[in-house]
Image (cartoon, rainbow, N blue to C red; front, top):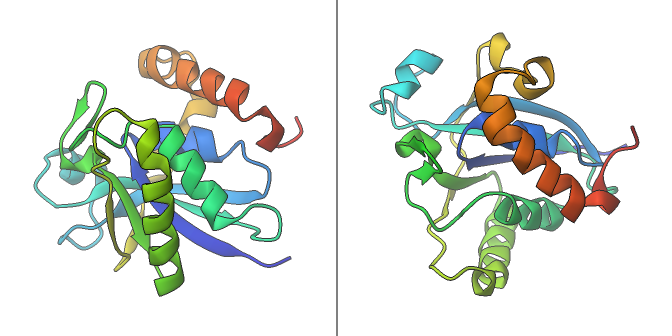
Length: 177
C-alpha cells in the first residue's frame, strides 16, 4: 500500500480531524500546527494568536483508495473557506482556511480544486495555499478528541452536527463501521 500526506487547516483541528478520520482510504489523522514562526509551539501559545500557526491536521492516506483531489473537495465542502481567520465562533489566524502543500503537484491540484469549488460559494474563497515548511504534532490530549469527548459542550454543539452532515453528504466515502 502506498502512502501520501496532506496538511489542511479549516478551523478547529478537532472538527477537521473528526471529518477526515472517517474517510475510507485515510490511514491516520494527526492534529497539529503549521505556518508559524515559533518552534514546537504549544496549544496555549497558538491560542494567543501571536505564533502565526494555524491549527491543522496531517492526513496520511492511500492514494490508490482516495485521491488528493478528492481530499481537497471534501476539505472545501466541510468548512467555510470564505471567512477570513474564523470558522463560526472560533476567531483568530489560528483558525484560518489553509492548504499546506509539499510538492508542486499538490500546489497545482489545490489551485485547480479551489477554482472548481468557487462557484459553490456566494463569497470568494480566501483559503491560503502555501508551502509546508514544518508540521508540529499537537499535544496528545487533542488527538482523536471528538471520539474521546463526544459529550463535551463543543463536541456536542459544534462538531457532532458537522460530522452528521458530513456523514449524510459523503456516505459513500466512509470507512466501514
